[in-house]
Image (cartoon, rainbow over all chains, first blue to last red):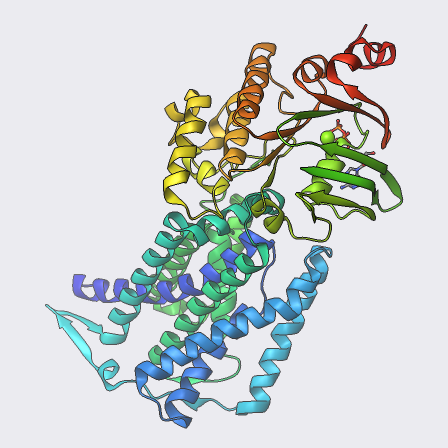
Length: 297
Length: 234
Ligand SMILES: Nc1ncnc2c1ncn2[C@@H]1O[C@H](COP(=O)(O)OP(=O)(O)OP(=O)(O)O)[C@@H](O)[C@H]1O
Ligand SMILES: [Mg+2]
């Protein structure tokens, strides 16, 4: 493989990994606070892409307006799901909440089939994303570049929020101990809602970028990326935001590079994530950045 | 300042607090002593809204606390240093203290209170950037008290602050409770270390299996035969 080709694959892997990371962060944040695997998160990703599609194709909004609308409405949908399906079960056994999450996932998926039909629709994207940039002899599609840049900005903004602002402090406090967080005068309901706003917005951005990269939408499009992002979150150490980012990047790179080096395996591309999941669960179930045997005092 | 009337707490079928009434007057140190499982923590947790009592009333500065959310109760000026410290292990010392001041916006006063906490516990200042999980037990207890003070409470409740501390460190905590009280904070203290707690307090209640069986001035209770036998190991 030439260096130029390798760099192209690298960029491609990082961009795919960034998308997994954006979605994985939502899984990991919700898990960190509610100890819940939010099965509906993949559908939130799909909703983000569909709402952008609605904004562009049906409402004829400008690109920017359509994307902003999609992100805001997806965030609202995430909060609504939490309010209706998770909040009433906050003191219930965890398995009940998990079942509720699975139910919400089916509900959203089928709602999208009913509203938009089951057939894929093509997703119009800004013409700039049809271009390919030449950096020396390396060819990078503008989409790839945009995905990497947008994800990097978002991950940095999120870290800033988590470690430098009060709402971030509240989220971290909540992820360690609800009752003690309450004693700090932290409003638990508000903070949980905010967590869903952040996670769902990132998933919406992920969904929109995904639809720009692979320009079509269908009601099941969130299934596989959602599952892989979940694997990425586990890989990095579920509950840990840096871990989700690293897990996403690793998974994206592994998928792209393995297929590039061994083209014969391209049919097994989607299996890589699950092999990785099995390996990590055998080798280090707490994930790369997860703490082992962490005792809560 | 605080008046508890006929408080009843149940956990499922367990009747943990049975019709407890007590008063915490302004500016005083009030102590609650009792054996393990007597219901001391349950009373404190009810006051701050972490446990929902089945019946009874809890009035703070004349307003009812029962049914209000913990964050609102803390904002109104009551705070609890929970049993077992419960500092945020992943946070630095400074972040823990900032978490204590979460609901406040008076930056100037927050700085003042931070300085006050550091003057009470110079150790915390030395370890300001250290992760709280790496502090010793005694330092964590200091941090838990400091964090509670950062909410600028009128009523500071402490659940066994000397638990697990070497006698010298425990003594330090008791001395500081006195200092905090001298600064005008009302204190409701739960302690197993009955001797020191009774010495320190203006008034005390003795709790047995969910009921108050004895109350009086701290110094009087120390002379009481039953208290000496049961709690002072004599
Ligand atoms: N969450 C809970 N669920 C069920 N029972 C509880 C719960 N919390 C406390 N209890 C029970 O209520 C009773 C009073 O407990 P509480 O913690 O208030 O006692 P305590 O006086 O603080 O004891 P200790 O000195 O050991 O801290 C005990 O019998 C305890 O087992
Ligand atoms: Mg207790």
